Amino acid sequence: MQVFRVAGKFAVAAFVAFGVAIAAPASAKPIVKTKFKSYSVPGTSPYALLSYMQRNGPNVNGSHALASTAASIHHKADFKGTKNCRVKNYKLTMTFEITLPKATQASRMPRNVRRRWKQFVSHARWHENKHKAIWMGCARRIEKKVRALRSSGNCNAVWAKARSVAKVQLARCDRLHAAFDRKETARASRIPLIAQALKAPKSSAGAAALRRSLTFKHSRVQATNR
Image 1: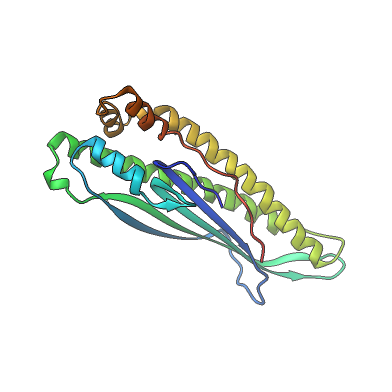
Image 2: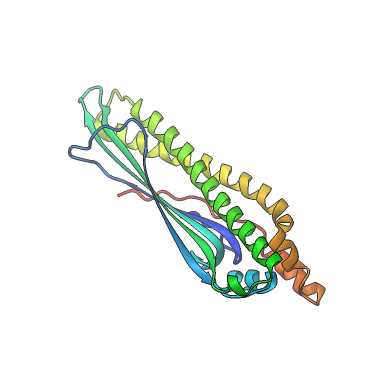
């Protein structure tokens, strides 16, 4: 499971499952399914909007996020041969569920706040779709490498290699997500809605707490085999 664990952040989660199919159809590239969801955000000021999302955004692994992407990766394959086993009819499916904020009081927002809110939501959508693109790049690498597997041993050895390939590529994917989030962290305070929200707290401690919550962090990806 990969997540940004600190409240008030964009987040991404992943679940990986492996299975052996009896007759899985061949696939030239990963199959992709994407679902968008929204959660309600009250408030008419940048500070009210941001602080609400930090406290009540989508729950990912016990923490709240401004927006989130859950990704599942499922593999199926047949195996052919005995002395020289190889992967046959490999199928990789990726399913994404992206959750974005939706304002419930947009009509009551001052015009400049409504404009900043729309910019923020557009950025959140772009951010989550970027995570999706990173996952898809990893999925394509996994599929290419698994399809090329051969073994002089039995098919159990090939399947072990397939799991190893996925583990290595998902670790690489994790590093790509981390690098992307470091860049996003560096520029988070320049997003107009967030920049305005950071000016609202009367105390320097309040502003510092709000700023700290904009640090994007995530845990390592873990593969679950079944």
